[in-house]
Image (cartoon, rainbow over all chains, first blue to last red; front, side, top):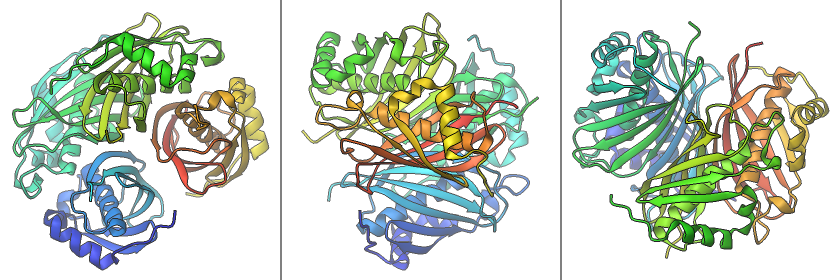
Length: 141
Length: 141
Length: 141
Length: 141
C-alpha cells in the first residue's frame, strides 16, 4: 500500500477548520503530513483541564478523533462528510498539564472504511498517554 | 451477581460534582439508580453542537464516560480516583439537537476492574445514537 | 426501529452451516430469533478447553462472532458475504467448563454496517463471562 | 519508558508452551524479542482455514492474543496467570492462505495492566490484514 497525501498540511488544516469551525476550540494544529502518517499538536486551554491540571478524557478523545479525520482527508481530499463509526481509546498514563501531541497512521484506506491508529503524548515526555484506533465511514463519491 | 447501589442518585450526583466540578459544564443529571443500572440525561448547550445542530462526538464520549463513572461510584461508594482505562464507542446515528439520555449497565464489578455498557439516545427518539463499553480501574482500598 | 427477522432460527442455522461448513466444529446452535435479538448455545469440545477445563479465549471470540453473523443474516437474509470489520471483546470472568450460551442484540442495522452487542454465559450460571460488540460490513445488494 | 526483555525469545516460547500446551495447535513461533517489541509467525493448518483458503477470524484473534501474551511475559518474566481482559480487533483485508506474521508493541507496562498493539500480515505481503489492541491484567506478585 503506497499512500500519498493529496493535500498539504496547511490545506487540510484550512479545509477542516472551514467545515468544522467549532473544532477550533481545541486549538489543534497539523504539524506534518506524509504517506499514511500525520503529526499534530493541541494547546489545551483551561476548560480542557481537570483539577490539578491534568487533561480531561473528552479532550484526548477529541484530539484522537480530529487526528484521524484530518489524516484521512489529507489522503482522500475534501470529503467533509466522512464520519467516525467507532473509536476505541486506551488511557495509559496521567497526562501532564499543557500541550498534547499526536501521531496518526492509516492502517487501512478502503473505499467505504478507513482505520487509523493514533498515539497521544503530553508535554515534553515521550511516554504515550493514550492510544486510540478510529474507524471512519467514507460516503460514496 | 446481585448488585445493590450504596448511594442514592442524589448522593452520587452531589459527590461527583464535588470531586469533578468541571463536569458540570456538560449539564448532566442522574435520573435513576437501581441494582447494576443507571439512567442519566444531559442538556447539551451551544458549545456541544456541530453546525446543523447535531451533538458532537466528544460530547457523546463525555456522557458515556460520566455515565459509567457515576454508575460505578453508586455501587462502590466514594472512590473518586477510579479512572477510565478503556472506552470503546460506536456512533450509530446522527443525534437530534437537544437533550441526550443515557442508560448504563454494570456487566462486571470486580475488585480492580469494572466494565459497563452504555447506550445513548437523543431527543424523544428511542433509536440508539451511540453505544459504548467502558472499563474503569478501581484503586486499592 | 422495528426489526423483524426474515428467516426462522432453523433457516438461518441451516444457511450458515451451508456457507460456513467449518463453523460446525464449534458445535453452535440457534435457540431463538426474535425482533433484533438472538439466543444461541455452543457445546465446547475438548479442543476448545484450556488446562483445568476453562474455555479458551478464541472459542469465546468465535461464539461472539458467529452470534453476530447469524443475528444479522436472520434480519437481512442470505447475504453470505457480510464480513466482520471490528470485534471488541471483554473477558469478565473465568468460564466454567462445558456449554456456553450467548445472547445478541442488533443496536444498528444500516445499509452498509450492522452493530451487535453479544453477551456470553457459561454452564448454568447467569453471570456474564464475556461481553462483545461486533461490527459487520454488508456488501451492496 | 525503557523496556528491556527479561527472557530471550527461545525462553519465552518454551515457557508459554509449557504453561499453555494447547496453544501449540496454532503452530506459532517467536521470531524476535527486543525492548518493548516482538515478531512472531504462525503456520496455519487446514483447520484454521475458511473455504477458499482464507484464514479464519478466530485464528487471527488467537495470534493477536498469543502475541500480546508472549510479549508481556518476555518483559515481566514467568507470570503464567496474566489474563486478557480486553481485545479489540479490526479485520482490514482478506488474508492470503498460508503463514501469518505478527508484530507486537507494548504501549504500557504497568503493575496491574499491560496494553499492546498487534499488527498481523499474511503470506509475503506487507499489507496489514488485522490490527488489534489487547489489555492484560497482571496478578499481584
